[in-house]
Image (tube, rainbow, N blue to C red; front, side, top):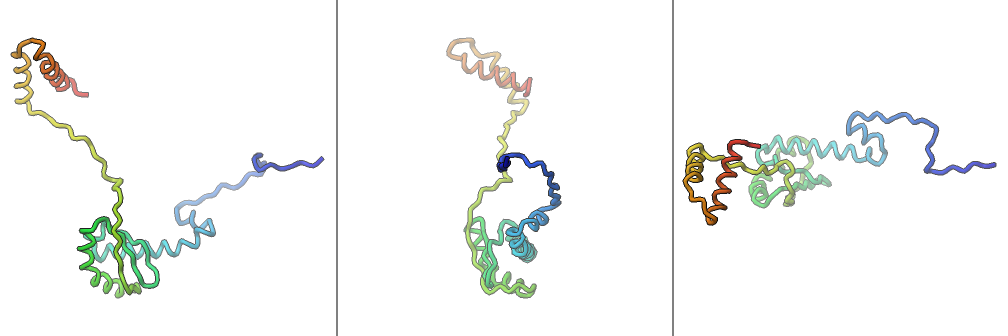
Length: 165
């Protein structure tokens, strides 16, 4: 009787677990990704050199592509692109001195969402003088249906002030 193998059955052969310690080791483990590793390394080195040459301007810029002497840079906004455009001859000259064969530099404005900036709701704090004035107002206000909403708001504010959280 022949036994058929199903790809969904669990194999009884134990495989040795992969032990990739870093991203580079993981990339080297796969042949297709290993072919990209020299390009990635070159782009990182070029990014580092550009940042060293123009540290203030280049902090928010990225190297997108470097092929056949053409350097393509990603710029987050048009204003920075205009400022950086004035520095391109200096950048190109310094990169040539560093050994990069940069014949031309192009800029591409790419607006991206900033993930690092999160908006924290601002908590307004009242000075103690204002709180005491509101407490005095709440105590002296006439207890009428017309003032009920205002009295409730003042009472809630004072309660939150006494018992935060």
